[in-house]
Image 1: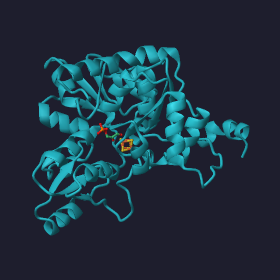
Image 2: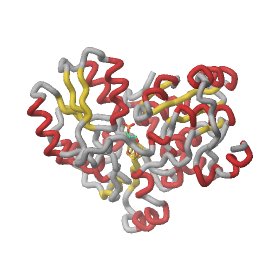
Image 3: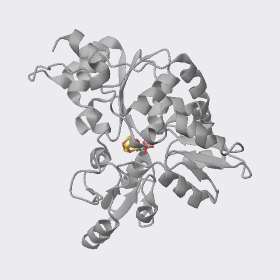
Image 4: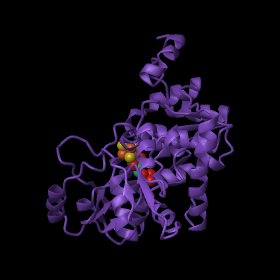
Length: 336
Ligand code: 13P
Ligand code: SF4
């Protein structure tokens, strides 16, 4: 397919559908493009391992936002999902932000459309809005403070106790925060399709076969799964726990992509993905996994697809992210 046809089809397909020479050394090409274009690759832990291995920074949603805000590169290539690349664009509006596949979405962001949320918000005029960063850029314009799984507790605790709160869009993270803080928050009814797939019965059975294994889980999981966990944390929190804890076996209740860094950091330890309700690889995020090394290469070569946001969204969406970054800094939650 020619470049002009592929570009014309970009909106419909979400990525540049061009043939890539199968003999090309994609890793070497990507490294060359990074140098030539002064580009930085930011990758989430849920990306394919080969993408993580070419990235300049691998992190969770908070770490990636902090890096996107501070990078001196001219181009940010975001190996993650759409809302993450939008956040990078809001934080660095003067830079070119690329996403290998525009259709790399998120079930949480999709669940909370701005028109529906605007109506929901009208029912609670005294409430302030805390939104999980897993939401669209437009939703951030309807948000007072953003949060990620790393700083959610610090964000809620920064709000005066008598101030009522709407928490959107993740009802599971919201329920976990209500339990931790004792705050009575109004929750939007959204969930992550990956973190809702884990099977309580199959985890119990797995633990019987691995009595010394610790079960660790992300707070996007449902309450009955979290109730079994020895440790609950963001992806970075989970990774750090496996590095510092004395256990040598872990059952991991989050997207399986994180196992790559866990295994790299602790090669002598064993990591078992928590089993889902059925036998497919449902603990892999289909949105995150839309990115491939080929798409990453093409998007760097042709600088497409690019994230473009209207100025009003950048201006109005920024305040909620800036507040989150300030609270994180005060709480000492800063990546280095
Ligand atoms: P964190 O990156 O905050 O751990 O969130 C996980 C996730 O689901 C990102 O989409
Ligand atoms: Fe969204 Fe869940 Fe995928 Fe994260 S893992 S991008 S929350 S669907």
